Image 1: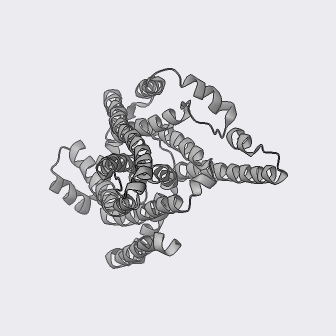
Image 2: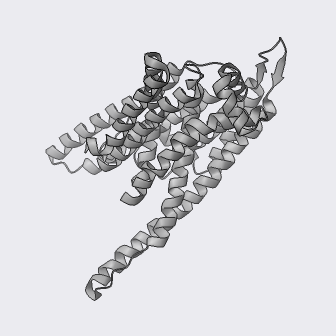
Image 3: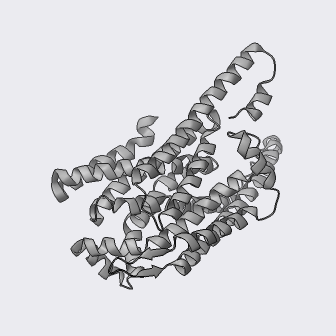
Length: 383
């Protein structure tokens, strides 16, 4: 199972590291290896969230996610995206931006750094909305940090609360962190309007893509219920019933949602990569290898049923998302070490995993005791 799921990741790793040696020797090899580890550590929470969505897709769409999806992730976010940032911010053509990345990497890095407020505001707001919608979800039965999740879930009854909270945080961010020291001279550049517009764009993107995927996901669930009932009757008549068209449309929007999620999670990895190297080739190789492992790990979590066995993993991942969103917003003004950014997510997910293990042991002990309270413990178990 491990080889089948991670086979392509192993192959891409070998090819990528060999390509790095041919491109820049052993120094390039080391840079690509470091970038790969950076991407995996920063995006582990992405894999957990993706798994929660991917498990609703059939095997065909899981393959699409690992093939077409990885092309979008590697070439779109890890190679094209940095070039697009430079092209838009510096008002250059794409070809000029590519030429700049190869022939003047220092200027290229400078332009990307100048565009960071827009990137951080957009990605930060998108990720913040994911966290807020999760924490304000009144329909969740299982809570990890009960002392905070239960009161916030009750507040979730207020319509559009997550949007209001996100906009308040965006306004505070724009007023507090949006004035940046100019790199050439002693003056300052007011980035508040840029931060506001980019943050609102991130929020709108979340609402559109999340709304569409949620709508079709609901339709898919309704259709699956009808199919189940219809197939029971069809067995007697020998006429199987399918809902391929609707399932395909629903899966497409879920796939689109996954790609937007991946794009948002990629922001910190792409920006963090510039702290290690300015060379776009090495950046694409390292982040591309990391992206492959994130996708393989996503599928592994789905096929092994890990999320069902360790129910707090999804909670930990969402808390990591919330932390990452705040970190992104803070980086509009203040630099934060990538080690801190990656460690926060890993620590939160590790804690949620350990809590899940303790929960499973408690359930096993209660089940062995035969007191019939396993169901209650499953719902109420938490910190």
